[in-house]
Amino acid sequence: MASDNDFRSVSRREFLKALSLGAAAAALGPLGLPRGAGAAETAGAGGKRLPNVVFVLADDLGWRDTAPFGSTFYRTPNIDALARRGMMFTSAYAANPYCSPTRASIMTGLWPARLGITWAVCHVPNVVLSAGVEKGARPEFKAIGTTSATRLKLEYTTLAESLKAAGYRTGHFGKWHLGQDPYDPLHQGFDVDVPHYPGPGPAGSYIAPWKFPPELNFTGQPGEHLEDRMSAEAVKFIKENKDRPFFLNYWAFSVHVPLDAKRALIDKYRGLIDPADHQRNPVMAAMIESLDDAVGTLVKTLDEEGLTDDTIFIFTSDNGGDMYDRIENLPPTNNWPLRGGKGNIHEGGTRIPLVVVWPDVVKGGARSGEVVQSIDYYPTILDMLGLKPAAGQKFDGVSVVPALKGGTLGREAIFCLFPHNGPWTGEYPSVYVRKGDWKLIRYFYGGEKQSDGSFAHRYELYNLKWDISERNNLAGEKPELVKELDALIDGYLKDSGAVLPVPNPKYDPAAAADLVDVEAAHMNASYAEPLPLPAAGFKPSKPKKR
Image (cartoon, rainbow, N blue to C red; front, top):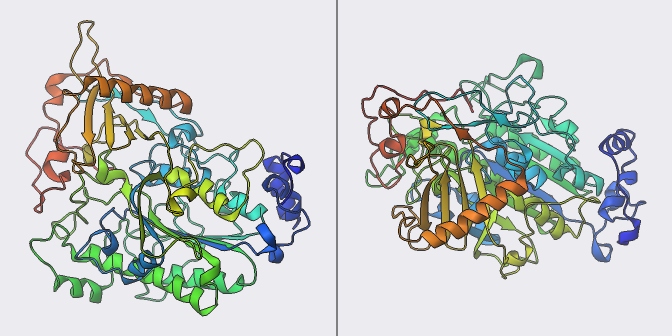
């Protein structure tokens, strides 16, 4: 490895130019690798070839939506097998309850608040590179939320760029949702991007013919499932690059809407429904099986090509399970015993499954209760590979290698900011901190009216060791702990440069009385039966496809 004195700063423009000319070695300096190392002979410590990295990110897959994490309805034999080979993290979190912010955090190792991407809006046509404050809010809301950036800016050195600079062949397959050209994967460090689509997913169905833009020329045989096709494309990438280190970024479209699946699988699960099971939607079960099949296809290919022992494999999700859509008169999934789901700042919105397979290092079947977050993947992967960040590059995340080796992390806390009004999921501008077993949620200006006419923040405090379902709010009983944790929130908001909500001067309590309590109505995951929405003067509209 090169010494620290050999590091030099490479501008993004210089870096991309060097790569476009096939001179990848020119960009290897910041990572401390020998500048003469060719792509096929890139070596780590001791001259051993660096391992491949396969990163599988499911979309909208909840914490309990696989068998290893407790589902008794969904069948996931391939993910089960991964868990038997690697380490399960039982307290893993997405950095945001929506997909785009979490994806941005994975690519940069930074808080979404620092990036300005705090909502799933990176498919919209207008380019917005910084967060701002909304011009106003309806009178039902106490706070005016913020606007989100709609692109991952090119100034950040992405995970793909770091690995490409280290000699890896890089391929992105599936959902991106961080911006169109020039913010697409091909401009963010990936050599290959399939299907090169910036949106959330196909319209209408996962069963071909898919409704992608015609210019992509990405069509399938009638009846072909999209995840089957995507895994087949990924297999080609693996086989084409088996003789060199590769980074396969498989960001599945599943199990995001559209809510449909192979008919035979739906019928299979319809016959397996247990009315007493919280999870009993046959369509979601069929979608999860197709996702699991894709994981199995990747693992089988690694086995066949003799690459299994030389490949780090990470499986996780971008946010909690979807509970606000409906199909067959049921929410897609149920996150019980967690409260809430996708789009919600309670545990069901951000706690996610995570399995890490690291041959010869992680003991098979291991479990860790260490608190990790999606901001940690980037620094962890570099640490696993023995690579250094680019000169001057800093992360908000930490390497979880100590936990992978059976130790502890010693981190102080993790944070999550959702500064928007999202009434369709029962969520309003809020932020949380988790420190140890304690979690404090701050709802901006959601409290009681003060003497000066303003509204105080509202707080919820939970001990997750004893109250994983977040039912017993202890904020009133532990004011000193609330004060201590709230000070951590203040420090995080200041450090990240977060754009924050402001009070709504047009707030009208009478209008607010007509708000539907969505969370109590159908986001409360402790109920097996979804409760009907109550009649009210105001029914929140669901967002367009996110």
